[in-house]
Every structure is written in structure tokens, then in C-alpha cells.
Length: 65
Image (cartoon, rainbow, N blue to C red; front, side, top):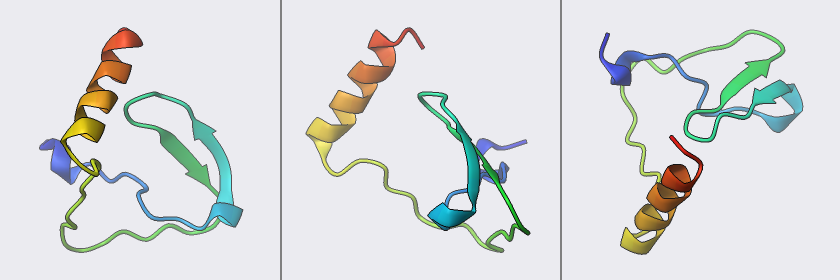
């Protein structure tokens, strides 16, 4: 399976969250109620700029991933 096809909860209402399993790189969310998923890909930009990108990489490396 292509990693882009994995159904992750990416958009949610905070009041419906039961638990956030705290993995540093990919958190897993447990929510109450029914879930829905987008039918098409959405663009996901997780870095504000180059410095933010490097900062996140350093954080992951420091944590031992």
C-alpha cells in the first residue's frame, strides 16, 4: 500500500477526540462518533519554511527515530 493511501485522521473537531496516542512522527487519534474520509487527495504542507523543516528533522533525529 502506498503511504499516501493510508486513512489517517487529519481533520477533526477537538471535542470528539477520545485519545491521542503520542507518536512523535505520526500520532494516532481515537475519536468518538462516526468518521468520514475525503474521496480525493488533499495537499498537506507540514512545514512553514525551510528552517521549520530542518527543525522538525532535528527533533525526530534527537528522539531516536
